[in-house]
Image (tube, rainbow, N blue to C red; front, side, top):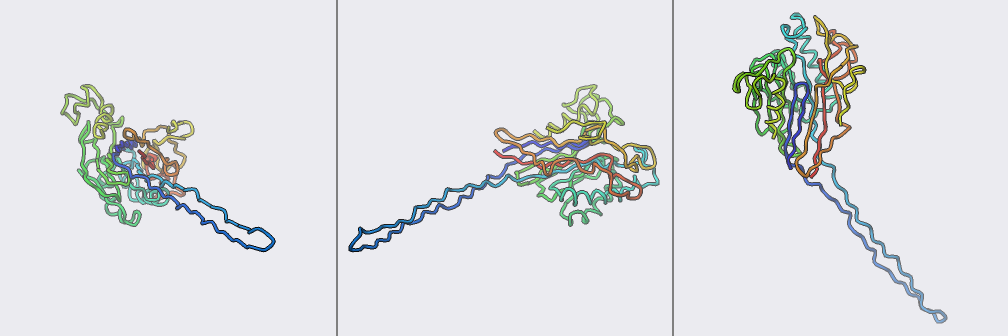
Length: 326
């Protein structure tokens, strides 16, 4: 079985490919009652025979549900003062407090999914996450990242077996990149790629192939943001539309001025949808999406402000429960 899963969250793309488990079948045993005969002869009547009825239980077949892989993703907001509205004195819009709020959501709202992918991770957050990771879900996650000291990188957290992993350069490198990991899951081997595509703040044109990470997937004159989806899909070989009036189905973005970039506004409204989880099953296979574990998260203000913040990130996250049968 081969599956391609794309988790694209305004910066995240994940792909999966693997073999699913065979369904198990349990059949109840068949029971047949042995007939009994009782005869009572008398001098005035013929013998009387009484037989118990024969009973055969119909076989029962139970098919176990396919395993579910739960993947979550969120764009953190790097909070770097020269590239955001987080003032320098705010420690990148209270980065430690925001991560702690996200830790609570991952545990209490998402139930510690199999994979959590982050985009737009700043050098400050690169320092914080390893130190805070033991506090998340009883320390079940390992961290996959190649810290290059860049202002905007990706991270993958998982409790699954890691077969291999790699940092990937995209058009616009070193600013734009991806991180790929091959994981062993209940579905089989899964290739998961976390990435952040170019935003309007830094979306330049590609020149000749080989320059600034632009490769054969990029035509001369393509903007980074046009080329990057093609590059990411090359690695990987039913949702509601966003309603900007109500924010339903939207995932981006909390926005505002200094000092906290709008994260201090409990009435902020998402008006775009640029965060996704996409999936495609292999030939002859059927993809199922578990509605109980699929949706947005971190898409509402906190119950009470933390260090003046009502939001842990400027994007809503996306979580998806995926299974495959063949």
